[in-house]
Length: 319
Length: 314
Image (cartoon, rainbow over all chains, first blue to last red; front, side, top):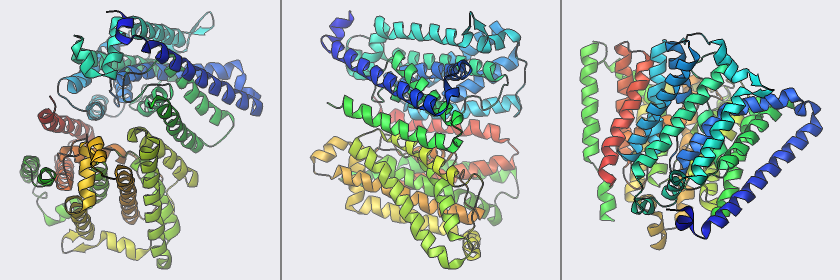
């Protein structure tokens, strides 16, 4: 089945709308960067820009996974808990970088599969299924660590998060590879088309013979794997394993996905869009710090932006 | 309509939760002599009033097919405002109560207004407002601040025999909410909208205004909770609401109310709050660390929704 058979003349308008949204986000990013640079020249310094990008990297992984789950009408509240649990467990078990990553990816996939099973096969609302796994994982990792996580970070591991190749941070290269792969998967494969079709209309997807339940499970597994990766990258960046690694990422990732054009009603979302939105969010946090505004204002700005962005997109997508 | 009325009354779900309560009490009695004492039960009741109040608000919102995640920020802001206005002087107490109740209803109305008139998913709206509200609370103060008059603290800590006043107050509110949901036109509309918003709209239910009132009511109940919390702690804390957003949903779901709306009721929520409070109490008596209590809580949610949801889905 080709994509034109599935989407026909509609795919053109969907693309056009996505392009408009990308332009709007880019414009918004340029405006806030310009204003901040005018107020504080320090903002555009290479050191600060690289800070922004490095801070955006872990969130970027999570956002891509979150978006894929949202495309199949899901929601993943457990991502932050997965980040911390994967980091605490895989680093606690071993101090070989390769093994840490292998264990982390497997663990993320397993947790994602549990989420997906509950949603697709048990009919549990994604919100509740992932809320429950979030709480269970929290208990598991605190019980495992007894409240104080341990383990040493190998040098190679830290290099993955803070090192660079020809001046390009390794974490960003990793994110780039994942982003390109995810983009290709979503836009150029039958699998990606089926994900979006399922989000648009689950019954129609079922009629075309798509294995709908496995689709949903796979989406949650991708989210779990990417959250696990994000947890490892974030720990590598910060240099410390913590039971609360990634706290707040569940809501930030949902916000970035929605601002980036993913619709909570399913079927819509693009990798470039959500990555731009991630950059916008992280820039806003950074700006508050650079301008010396109080951290509390960050919350007010973030909350307003989430509602505002949702309002803009809701108006657009309404027929 | 008969269907709707029947669904709100006693259900197998309630029996299951009652059986759970019995089980937890038995385990509790087995694990400690001090468990089944009036003093301990009064203690458990003190622990659960705040959660019971927020869960009541959440039940009404969820019945209407929505969700309210703004309590985390709202409770923080409302306690700070209340404790700041009230102070120790009894003369400003009434004014503070009225102001905070109005503020709570106003916050709820904003949530409801954005949900209904702009048409954004309530999850996103209330997540956004929650973030804004906790930002505002922290802008006012970073540390717990203000105070409440002594007579109010006495009232909140007061007991009628071995029954805390807070329990009686909570029961009265649950009865009122039950009456509102089961016996009034407004209640039927809430159920109808939660069951099928489009069908409700077509049959002439004023969907928008009803939803607006539901969210305003939710904010109003959050304000009552905030005042109670101030009475317990004696101060307003910008972080008082942390965790209440998700915590308020657990008892609603365990009590058999469907997250999709339209089915369930306040009785199930009340029973579920009792189960959860007793369970935490018993696990404490058994010296189980709070780490394992989290695991138990998560597994209970999964078990509850798997059982209840399994019946409805295809």
